[in-house]
Amino acid sequence: MDPVGPLRLGVNIDHVATVRNARGVVHPDPIRAANLAEAAGADGITAHLREDRRHISDGDIDRLMTELTLPLNLEMAATDEMLEIALRHKPHAVCLVPERREERTTEGGLEVARDENRLAHFIAPLAEAGCRVSIFVAADRPQIEAARRIGANVVELHTGAYCDFHAADRVDECRAELARLTEMAAFAFDLGLEVHAGHGLAYETVGPVAALPQVVELNIGHFLVGEAIFRGLEDSIAEMRRLMDAARS
Image 1 (tube, rainbow, N blue to C red):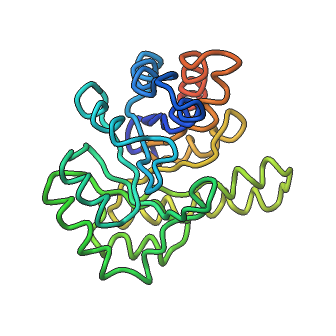
Image 2: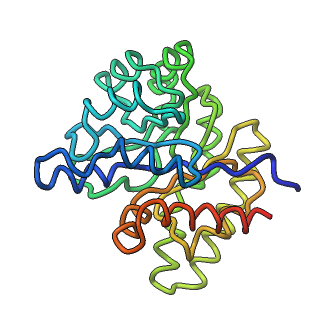
Image 3: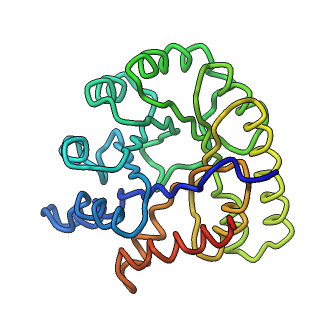
């Protein structure tokens, strides 16, 4: 099938805040990073407000909502505290992700199928407030079906396993995971869900995912912030944008 639309790039600025928080000062400023991302070709900004505030802070969200010109995708856990924050700010999109305090980064997709009733009630007020609700899930049929049943607008497919297999040169497993992502992107699209993807994507891995015709948005952060140390943030994002566009065409 032909691509369903232009491929958007959402830049996650969490780890600009991680560097800032390492010294407890005001630099580097994640909102400045968001503005540079826009100049480099980003279509949106993603920020994960964690329970322990290890990177993005409440003040960052306040500033993003007042200063950002791009759409904000607020990543958060499905907790009462985060729901109150999201309903106060009403960002363009809310992406529900699993969160464990001891994890280094988001590990795996959200368990939707075993928590449908609670999550359906959780996302209802977000939808009523005008937020597009996305669920971060593994490329797994029951989770995608459950996301559709609870009323999500979007599923974001977790690409972490594919990227990890690629980095470890586990070729057969990498191919199998990419095949699973391909199948589940088509499945989610056929259910009427908008399909996004992200986690762990780098220059070497983005092409096959960007080429999936049903995927309309990639969310990428850690790699871009790390690459910015060597080539600058705008250039690192512009190169990712170029590779995405080349894969799509």
